[in-house]
Image 1 (cartoon, rainbow, N blue to C red):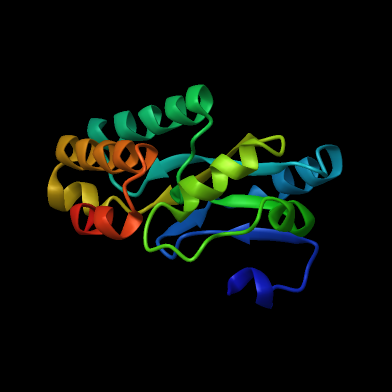
Image 2: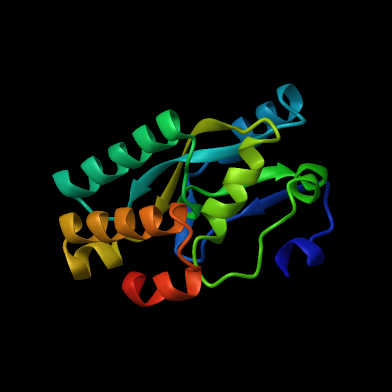
Length: 157
């Protein structure tokens, strides 16, 4: 729905609980100028202090680099044309970001920008960091094994 309502040639998707650091526009503008046909995600951070959120964010960035699998918490910026070529976000209740990134990777993937996307640590604080990481990993594994997102949703909560 958001992409259809947008008017520009570039799209920026952010979760409601994610904010981009001041000055992100400068790096985004340079990226658009130099890598106009590609997508970009941002460097993840959490809005909580301590070692656990730093380690979880570092793990997410390692996953992003090695497996080319960022989550929606990192934001996504891409040309409207590339969004359409990759088929857009499917109407599924969960893992829509993973599903779309899988298709985007077949179209040339993305670049990780240094600008920071800070997202809420609320689920991690509520469930415990280790438990939330395990739940997220289990949900991702189930999705990769072909379990329907509708069935995964109750586990994710």
